[in-house]
Image (cartoon, rainbow, N blue to C red; front, side, top):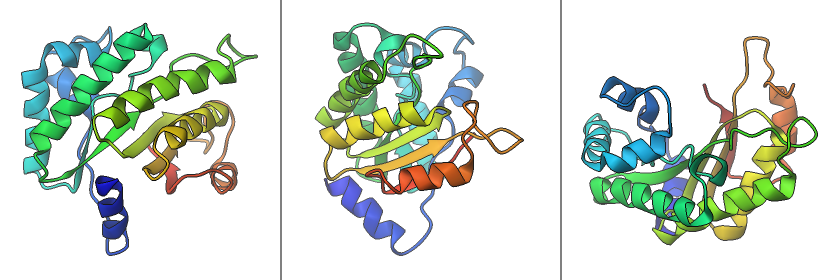
Length: 207
């Protein structure tokens, strides 16, 4: 848990700076607008390494893996989830070379939870458990759960990551519209109260 410990120590002293967006950078460098960002990045690992290098040269404290869409509903089988997440995390870790911290980007499955959709809470938990196990296998112990709109799905991701990485650092984030609520109707105060009951190190908003 060396990276998580370093991050906590750094946060005790000052604001920590992250890198920029992976998807927007890759789109500007040839990635098509449809399909899986993770699969495309895996097929263009030299370009992915270049992205990480350019962000590192800009001076952040941490870069994030290109694994935002790295769950089963987007990648397919559990084996594919494991292979893709491991490869993309290893690319980030190798490029960082210990110069900056490396955290994992984890996003929504893209599926709606029951009763709005067909994804059950247990299925969501298993999706994130598969991804978290792959990321942890590479040595990742910092997790940024980003751009969630359903607090139930976010809870599934948090518990799956915490079960995989008991001492890891978890930042849980939701995206709010101009009216101040997520697509599921969650407001910032509700998020803060909800997160106060869950094993996270930080919570906030993004996008």
